[in-house]
Image (tube, rainbow, N blue to C red):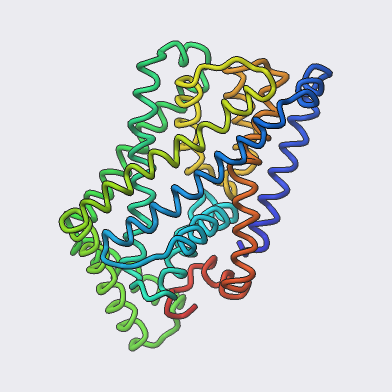
Length: 349
């Protein structure tokens, strides 16, 4: 799937599902609530999103510092927007990493370190979600009683988390096994002519992979030894980042006059956000809007759940994705971005 096609699919699914939700759920009471919404609270929701951007940019800077690299705050902000854009045009939001690694590489950060920095950012988010959802559910266990769908999501999240952490631990404990696996994949690609027929090129690729895997492992060692203070700062900023994103929903509910329990909104969103990482559509589009409308009906009347889901998605994702499009066009160019999207190596891009 090309970059342009991924973006088109994202837009079609998002707008298509949004239109369906509006058609099926919006009534006169919904329109009245929107027209009488507190404008200052809507502005507050935008400010909360901007604060989330600041926290995420600061987290990139802190993780880079933990790896003994320098990333300025403006570049950290750019990396945040690139992540949103890359995630929007790829299945399971997997495309943000390559864009970030490339941007770091162009500023002198080795690829292995760039991968480790972006992976640690994702790991911190997943770790916090792993802890936040169960804690919130223990504080308010009645949440699961209201939705069999949410119960299924919780079970799915637990299984995926266990497999994910097991794999990450394996890469750190058995790096040689990962190297052997990468060699097998390269030889398989050579066999089917995906890498051409040059043995010299294959050897060069294998050597490059071994070096970057070593950098990846080394970066984790540095972060957990000499970079502990910066790692702690990154953890704090990660918590603030997620709290800011999760606060958009209750702020929007308050703006239209809906009552809410803050812990309940966190529990629902933490489970839902984790699931979105593994939805096969570009950026989780379609499912994010439709699933949000279904889940948010636990928190509010059905005639408001759909439109609040769309509004929340607009504030927390669409604005960031739009900023990412601007960054891609102005900073990377569409051609380089297309190469990254197709999985080209940083050296070839």
